[in-house]
Image (cartoon, rainbow, N blue to C red; front, side, top):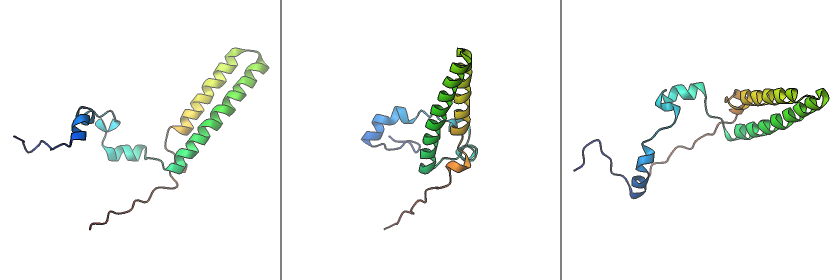
Length: 113
């Protein structure tokens, strides 16, 4: 017997059923609308820009930190400059800043036939 709350699952869905019930996202704690306002999704061009900025900041930052360490002849300065590089990279890359969301996708409406 099937109650009104049960759903008929396909064979593929039945194999994934235990995994589909677990939600590891923050939407468990916050409504999805609030999450989209706090951190809206970035577009594909923004993802590419974030990737390029990540590599630029890491390579440039660690090259500068290596140079500072060699000039000062102290490993402490190299480590501090490396940590500062990671912190700058985290602040620039992690949030979805407005310049990552300049080209949003326009979805096509479904045609009913």
